[in-house]
Image 1 (spheres, rainbow, N blue to C red):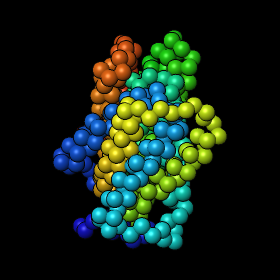
Image 2: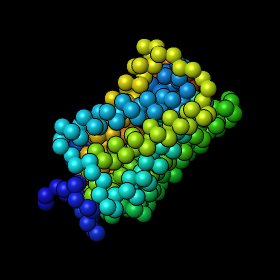
Image 3: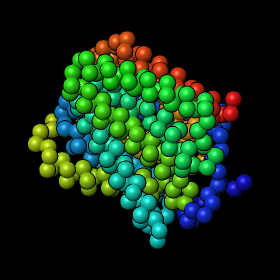
Length: 308
């Protein structure tokens, strides 16, 4: 079967997504590995710049990478009739999700933020049941979702016993994880008919405009152009918002979104280890128990997705 032409409008019945191949699964695991450093980069950058300001810096650098890729692939970036609404919806979801993630990390630890943002594959599994053909919930998937929710509860109870500000950051991070899951499912639908470069540039442009205005209104903290901030913005923009987003959309265009996203459940393990090594954060038993439950739940969902 020929690949869909992303420059043409989506057909009324878009092609069904395929199960992950071994090669695609390895690529998804590679993306998950580099993505695990995103919360650490954000947390490190927050020492020198406020949350919304770091956001628009990331969007600018990531948008430049996507624009170079679009020019290199000769992508048609003209917005056609019928594309404005889905691009606007995507921009809104993306901008709100990143705002919750950055602000959440300014209140909680990188370890907590990574686990809670990393719950998005669970939300993808739930949402895909309603919005993606052939990606339905079944009893095994439902058990997996409940186990993962238990992991979320463990982390919330741990935060409640430490600091109310930490709990607020956790709530924001979990909301970000849900919105990221919604964005993954929405992307998997509209990427069949809109070129991925348009989707990524729409997100970047909408994010830059919104975050610049919001930062000017709500943030008075000055930023310091340190090497740490430059490295943080480089990682978030070039590695994640550039290469990572391009690779993820390529996968979502072809494979079942729940399977693509569930590979990302490896992120919390890498992320909390990096938070310990780079930021010196504690690795307590509640954090590890939460990670184990979330990943175990995802394992059940994965087995349900593969029909085993």
